[in-house]
Amino acid sequence: MKKVMSISSVVLILLGFIIGLVVSQSSQTLTAAEQKAKVSPVKARERDVYFPNSEDLAPDEMRVVACGTGMPTTRAAQAAACFLVELGNGDKFLFDIGSGSAERISSLQIPYDYLDKVFIGHLHGDHFGAIGELFIGGALMGRQKPLRVWGPNGPTPELGTAYAIEKMKEMYTWDLAGRVGMVDFRGYSIEVEEFDYKGENAVIYENNGVTIRSFPAIHSIDGPVSFSLEWKDLKFVFGSDTYPNKWFVEYAKDADIVVHECFVAVPDLVRKMGFTPEQALVVGTQIHTAPEAFGKIMTEIKPRMAVAYHFFKDFDTTSEINDRIRRTYEGPLSLAEDFMVWNITKDGIKVRMAAVEEATWAPPLVNKPELPQKGDREKYSNEMSVPVDAMVYSEFIKEGRWGEVDKALRGVYKEASEALGREFPYPADPKESDE
Ligand SMILES: [Zn+2]
Ligand SMILES: [Zn+2]
Image (spheres, rainbow, N blue to C red):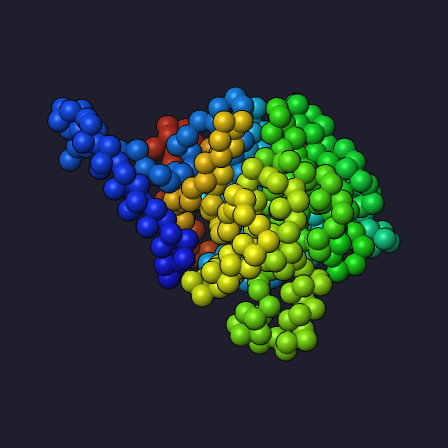
C-alpha cells in the first residue's frame, strides 16, 4: 500500500523536525554519558509507531484502530468503514465492517475468537460489505464460536439486519455445504441481535462492564443508527453514516473519542468524482455530513478527540477537508486513514499510525481445535434444507479423479507417517477421510 506522501505525513515530518530541535536543545542539559545512553548505533530506540501484537493494553486503556475509513467506491489505499475498539478488560468490538476491511483486520494478527462481536450501523455495502469474509474467513482462521452481529431493524422486516444476514448465509449455502463435515464447524454460524432503530440512547449490549447504546441516524432511508460504547469512564462514539442530527449532538456529548462521517468537500466531488454541481451539493451536504457541518457538530459535542472519516484522504483532498472543518471547529482533530490508532486513557490520547504486516497468516487459536463432529452434516442438512448426500461427491465426479497422481500423493502420506511416527492411511475418498 504505497502511496504518495500525504499532507499529514508532511505535517508529521515538520512536527518531528520541530520536536527534534526542541529535544536537541534540551539535550544540552544532559551529561555526555546520559546522552550516549539514549542514542546508540546498536540499541533500538522507542518509535512513534504502533506495531500490532507488541504492546499490552493497560487495565484502564482503550485502543481504537481504523480498519477502514474510505468510501463505497473501493480502492487499495483505503477500505470502507470499520473501526475496532479494544479494551483493557480483553473485550474487542468491531463497529461496521465495510468492503475491504477484513484484510486490514487480518493485519492486526488478533486471534479470531476475540473478533466475534460486530455492530453494524446501517446496511450500505461500504459499512457491512466484508461481513461475509469475517464470517467465512474468520471461521477458517480460528474463530471457534458463532459470529455475533448487532444491527438495527428497519421500517419493514426486509430492510432489517436479520434479513440481510439470513440472505447472506443463504448466499453461502454451497460454501458451507462443502465445508461441513470437513473442518471444525463451530465458527460457521451467525447470531443476529436486531434492535429498534428508533431507540434513543437505548442499551443494546451490556456485559463485563461495557455498555453499548444506539440512537437513530439520518441517512438514505429509515433504519441507520449510531452507537456509543461506555466502559470505565471512557466513552467511544461511532456515527456510521448520518446527516447531522439532534440525537448525535445529545448522546455523543463529552465523549472521549467521537468518530463521525465527514464527506468529500463539494468542489472535490465535482473535480475528482465527476458529479454535477447539483449532485455534489445534494450528496455532499444533504445526504452526508459536509466538513463544515462536521466541525459544527464537534464544536457542540466537545470530544477529547474528534475523528473525521469517510473521505478519500489524498495529498490534494486533505487540506480542503481540514480547512473547511477549521471554519467551524478548533478542537482536537484526527483526519482518519486506515491503520490510524488511538490509545485512550483518562490521562491522555495518543494518536499514531500502525506499521502492519501485509503477508499475514492465521493468528494462534485461543482454544484447541475440534475435529469435525459426526452429526455436523445432518445438523446442517436440517438447517439449510440441503440433502446430506449432496455434501459429498457423486459417483460421477468421483470417477473423474485422475489416478495417475496417486503414487505421487501416497508419497506425501508416507513422508508424514515417517516424520510423525504414526500411520496416516491413504483415503479412498477424501471427503470421507474424517469418518
Ligand atoms: Zn451509507
Ligand atoms: Zn458510507
